[in-house]
Structures are given as C-alpha cells and as structure tokens.
Length: 305
Image (cartoon, rainbow, N blue to C red; front, side, top):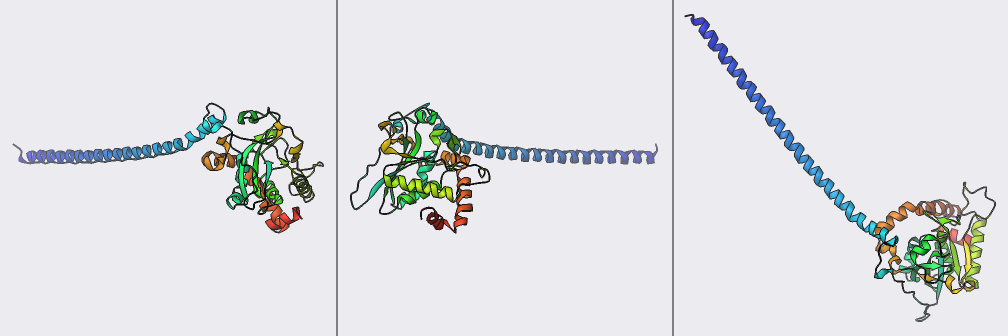
C-alpha cells in the first residue's frame, strides 16, 4: 500500500469538504441576506401602502364635502337650508343711519366676502346673497344659473352711512370685479354673472355713474388687450330699482348660499382660485392703479374727488 497516495487522497478529500462547507456557508449567508432584503422591501411596501391609504383617506375626507356641494348645486337633493334666507330690514334706531346698496359682480359667494371686513368692523351691518333685475318672483338658484329668469347674482349690503359712505362701498366693489365684460365674470359665463349696480336713490345713481365715468377717463381698466377698443371699456350697468317691476327687485338666495365663503371654505377656496379673480384684481389695482396714483387712498381720491 502506497502511504503517500493515501495521505494525498485524504488531504484532497478534506479540502473538498472544507470548500463544500465554505460554499454552503456562503450560500446560507446569501440566502439570509436575500431574506433580509425581502423583509426590508415588504416593510417598505407596507409603509408605502399605509401612507397611500392615509393620503387616499385624507383626499376622500376633503373631496366628499366638495362633491356634496356640487350635487346640491345641481339640485340632486335639497333640505331645510334650501329655503329663502331672511332679509334684514332698514332700521334707523339707536342712532344709525342705515341704507342699502346692491351690487352684481359675478359669483355672489365672492361678492359677499368683499364686504366681510367692513361688516366685522361694524360699518356694514349685514350682507345677503340674492338675485335682482329679473322677470320672475322668488327665483331659485338653478333657475338663475340657467339664465332663464333675467336675474343677476347680487349681494345686498345693509350699511351705516354714518360710518361708511356709498362711495367707499363702490370703491370696494370695483376693486373686486372685471367690469369690462358684459357676458359674464371670470370663470362664470352668462349675463346673470355680469356686473351691475342697482341703485335706490338719485344720490346713489349720481355717485355710481360719476365713478364709472371717472375710471373710464383715468383708464383704470384699460389694458394692452383692449387698448384699441373705441367704445367704453367699463360695461357695468347702473339700474334704478325704482323703475323696475316687483319681479325685478331684490330677492334673497337660499340659506345654503349665505356666508358660503365661511361655511364651505374648501370648495369656495378651490372655486376662487380657479376663477382667476384675485390675479386680475391684484394686477389691475395693487400692481397698476394704486402705483399710478400713489397708493390705495390716492386712488380713491382720484376717482371720487
């Protein structure tokens, strides 16, 4: 028997076993790493899935009220808040000097917000969204939206003349509208959304007409787009309520629409952003007219001097 060959074979066999053990160990390590990686991926997917679920739930919680409002507007359901709102009456008690101003400036949700600050200050006593200038008594929102009644969406402003003047209300009004259109206002198309001022006295009529004439002369709303237009730029109509039949007077909108900008902030914010109202008014007044006249107060003086 060859001892050397036996020893060599034994050594070779041991080496092979060691390699197999190392290979087996390496394979086990790799499997463990793969398993750990799979576990990490699963945890990541679970975490991502939870985040996605939370995002979806958050979106749903915001979107459901929005869709509810849309379906309400479209008339798919109604409730107690579809009744007509009460209208605060003029009451010159307790030393107040009350009067009413009525403005059409597109969506009445936005117009009601226009007078929020003076209302909180006590200068404006109440605002009511509604309809005016039509041929049907007690119109409903859907009727007016379709443009079949001749009404415009308006806001009725009950104010104290001893604290805020009609001229100041006019100034607030024109700073929130695009009076250059007679076929709608910003996002909303149709004459029911065009601008108009409904006056109830000779004084209001005179001040409204003079303000329009003055702004026309000062080119407040003149832009590069309408620079070549020869006709008057401002299309806002001044309508005397005293000359209208009962059907053309102010009618309150449904309770649902009152203070909409406060009660339905989510949808209102989306609507206002999409409308383009704020960029337009910012560019027309803060970026141009106020700069031209030397400030907001100077702009007022230039128009109502």
